[in-house]
Length: 387
Image 1: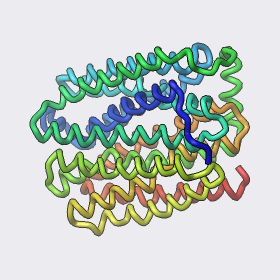
Image 2: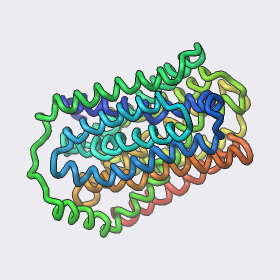
Image 3: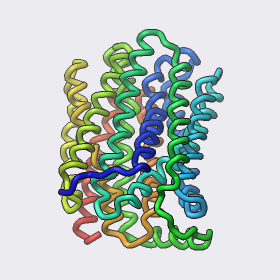
Image 4: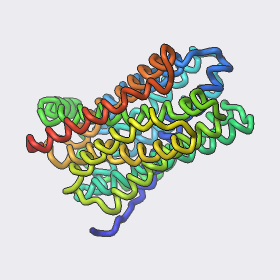
C-alpha cells in the first residue's frame, strides 16, 4: 500500500481530536470526586453526558449548513474556541446546574468537531480515506489515553479537578488557532446555498442504505462510550480503587483503541473494511462478557484493552464504508451518520448510570454485549444488500 502522507490541515484535525476527546472523558475520570464535592448521584453524573451530547447533536445538525457557507476549517476553528469557553465555565461551576450548563456548552463546541473533522479528512484524501480516517481518529483515542492517565494521576495527588478542566480549555483554544492558521489549505469548493444544502440533507435521508449504516453507528457509539464513560467508575466503585487506578483502566481501553486504529490505518486496505468490522464485533461480544468473570484490577485492565481493540475500527470504518458505497453528498452523509451515533453515546451513558444506581455499576455493563451483536447484524445486512 502507498505511504501515508499527511497535510497541514491533518495536523489541525489531530489537535482538534485531542481537545475533543479530552473534553469527553474529563467528567468520567473526575465523576466520583465531583459527585462527592457537589453531592450528586451517579444518575445525575450520567445526565451530564446526556447534556453534552444533546447540544452536540444540535450543533452537529447545523454544521453541514454552516460549513457549506463558510468552509469546514473556519467553522472548526470557531467550534474549538467555543469548546474552550465551555471547559472554562465547567471549571468555575459551583453547583450542579452550572456543571450542566458548562457541559452543554462543551457539547455545543464539540458538535462541529464531530461533524466536520472526518469530512475534512475525506476531502484531503478521497481515494484512501479509510486509512487516513483510522489514523487521525486514532488521535481521538490518544487524547483519551493521555487525559485519563494524567488526570487520574493529578486527582490522586489532590490536584483540584477544576484546575484540570481549565488546563484542557487551553488545549481547545490551541486547536482553534491551528484551524484558522491552516484554513487557506482547505480544498476550495463552490459555496452552497441553504437550498442546495437542504437538498443534500434530504437525499441522504432518502437513501435506504444510509439507514442501515446509521443503525450501525448507533451501536458503535454505544459500545465505545459505554466503556469510555463508565470504566473508571467501575474500577473505583466496584474494586474500591483510587482515581489513579480508574484512569489506568480507562487508559487500557484507550490504548487498545489507539493500537487498533493505527494498525488499521497502516495495514487494512479499503476493500477489507467490512470484514474487519464484522470480526471486531464478534470479538467485542466475547470480550465484553469477560467483565463478569474477572475479579482483579490487572485482569480487568486486560479485558478493557481487548475491548478497545475490538471497537477501534467501528466509528471511522463505518463512515468510510458508507462514503465508499453510497452516492450521496459525503459531508452531509458523515454528519448524519454522526447524528445517529452521538445520541447513542449519551443515552447509553445515562441508562448505565440508572442501572448502576438501582443495581451496580458492574451489572450496567450487561447491555454492551447486545450492542456488539446488533452492530454485527447490521453490517452483515449492508454487505448482503450490496450497500
